[in-house]
Figure 1: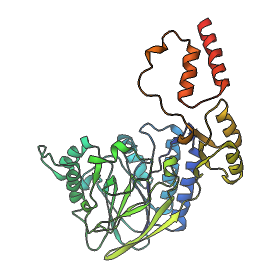
Figure 2 (figure 1 turned 90 degrees about the vertical axis):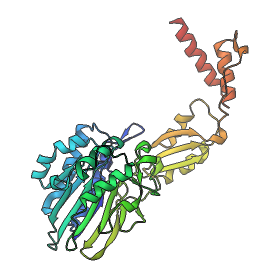
Figure 3 (figure 1 turned 180 degrees about the vertical axis):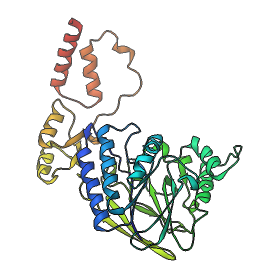
Figure 4 (figure 1 turned 45 degrees about the vertical axis):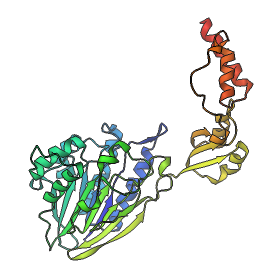
Length: 385
């Protein structure tokens, strides 16, 4: 059977205050097109459908339309909650989604209550089992282990042991004559970060060894790390990565979805299909004159700009006039003054605010009389109002 693995849509995510909903719609429309073109039997969405636990109505509409588009023509669609999603909300949608041929799993469930999704591949007639593990916080890992694996409440094992217990129970029914899949939203030890993950829910206690996945699994579809990668494990363990870079830390990532062919008794074959609809993110450096020369080559990419000149009044406006898609403009550290250290010296007593501000500018390497003039104008306006 053939399925498509995707994750980390982060619908509703903005970049420096700029809405990217149109881009996200284009990317998701492209994914729907890939699913149809590749004639997949199923689509697995491994969490973080949304960027926030309280998504806007527009973000929810886009995700719902996408899931409905994927579910047309009999494609099985299974989606789980990631750490950015609100698990109870996804569970509340379950009855409606089920009526449309979509399986949503917000919270960890026992196998017989939805923790294992079973269906027959329409193209081959092969039985398929998908053990699903939505994101688990430290707090709820213990509860999930009690619920699914009947781990005693007094058990105080580490986070990875709780997940091992849950996965062991969910995958206990994997059979030789079925396609056995695992889908989870978590961090694998030694996985490479994409750049935009929520670090507090990705590192230290939240990282688990790839060995927690059973060798009987034909494929493990992961979400959470935004970079496309395969992890070393006894079975094929893959992150599909995010199909759209969420911030400048991900500008070098390659956006793909994974199309996987799997069958009982044979290794899975994975093909990366590029996703090209999103706008590029790029970082550029240079003086204002050098940035002017670069303007024609950056296209419609959103830009982070490091200006290689000392700060002065109006510098940002000059840069954005040359590069309208510059969302972040900073002074290159080489041209920025050293950060002031410690508290102001007592000698500052008796000097005017304008004199103190002038000294501050000097310490920061800003030599522009217009900034000092603006400060004096604003100061006079404030004290006289």
